[in-house]
Image 1 (cartoon, rainbow, N blue to C red):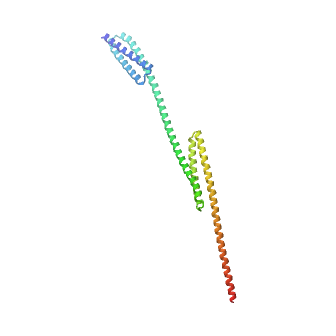
Image 2 (image 1 turned 120 degrees about the horizontal axis):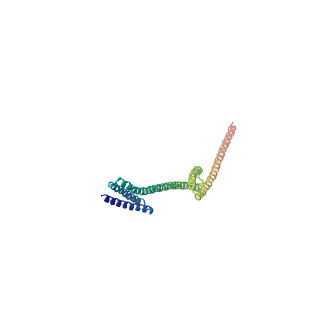
Image 3 (image 1 turned 135 degrees about the horizontal axis):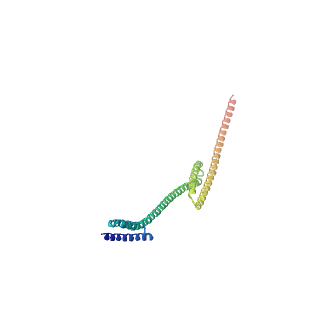
Length: 259
C-alpha cells in the first residue's frame, strides 16, 4: 500500500513540475493575462493534488520517515511559493498597467470632450460674429441707399439718426464677438481677427461721417427753407400793413375833405 501511495505521489509531483514549467514559460513569453491565469490555476490545482497525495503517503510511514518526507514536501512548497510570488507580482504590475491605461483613456476622453466643447464655443462665436457683421453691413448699405435715393426728403435726416444708433449697436455686437474670438484664437487667427475689426471700425467711421455730413446739410437746407418762409411771411405781413396804413390815410383824407 505504501509503495502504491508513493507512486501516486510521485506522479502528482511530475504533473506539478510540468505545470510549474508551463507557468514559467508563459511568464517568459509574456503570453498574456488570461493564459497566465489559466496556467497558475492549473499549477495551484497540481500543488493541491501533491499535498493531498503526500498526506495519504504519510499515513503509511513511521515518525522518522515522516520527518524525512516533510523535507521533500517543504522543497515543493518553496517552489510553489516562488511561482505564487512571481504570479502575484505579475498581477500587481498588470493591474498597475491597466490602471494607467484606464487613466490615460479617461484623460484622452476628457481632452476630447474639452476639445469638442471648445470647437462648439468657437463655432457658436463665429456664427455670432457673422450674424453681427451681416446686420452691420446691411445697415451700412441702408445708409448708402437712403442718401442716394431720399436726399430731398425732409424726414431723411431723422431716419438716418435712428440708423446711426442701430449701427452703433451692431458695431458693439461685432466687437463682443471679436473679443471672444481673440481669447480662443492662436496667433495667426488673432491677426486676422484684428484686421477684421479694423475694417469694421473703418466702415463704421466712414458711415457715421456720411450720416453726420448729410444730416448737417439737411438741417441747413431745412433752416434755409424756414428762413425763406419766415421772410416771405414777414414781407407779406409788411405789405399788408402798408396797404392798411395807406387805406387808413386815404379814408382820413376823404373825411377831412367832406368837412
